[in-house]
Length: 166
Image 1 (tube, rainbow, N blue to C red):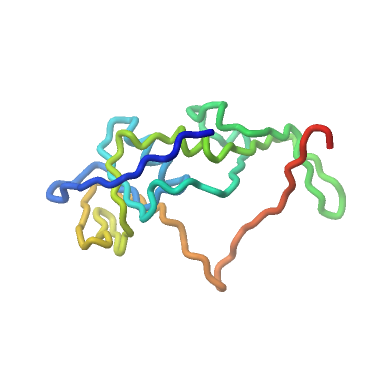
Image 2 (image 1 turned 120 degrees about the vertical axis):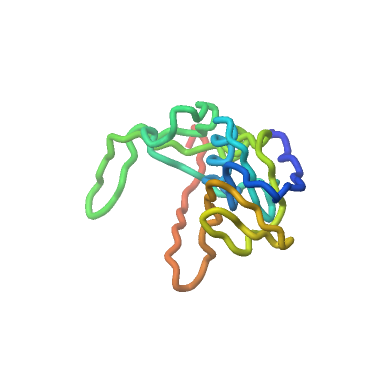
């Protein structure tokens, strides 16, 4: 059982710019915030629910996962994925399903200043959060994603988890 995520609340000095501002702490935002902090940059991340646990299932081609990602985040690997179109196609490219909780836990935010809030406006070097404060940064990364809508494409998948006996 993974440890519960910490409850974040940080007061950020906005008078001087930080190195990196990350808006959104989903998988992409959390990864860039964690890696930038690990590289020695000062990082501020803003998210309305920074402690929320992810519930989606993530997967990727094995060769596209970064080398720094620990093996323990892999829940399963399919060595030869199969795709049905008009006929069966077996792919010779291993595909990994990630353990969502372990993935989130390995993207450590200990060195990141985390602000609980919503980014209202964002530009190349700053963001205004829901408190009205402007946070300035040398680099701003917008990792908030796009809101769902009837005019936007969405991806979903369906699968079943079976035990080994099945």
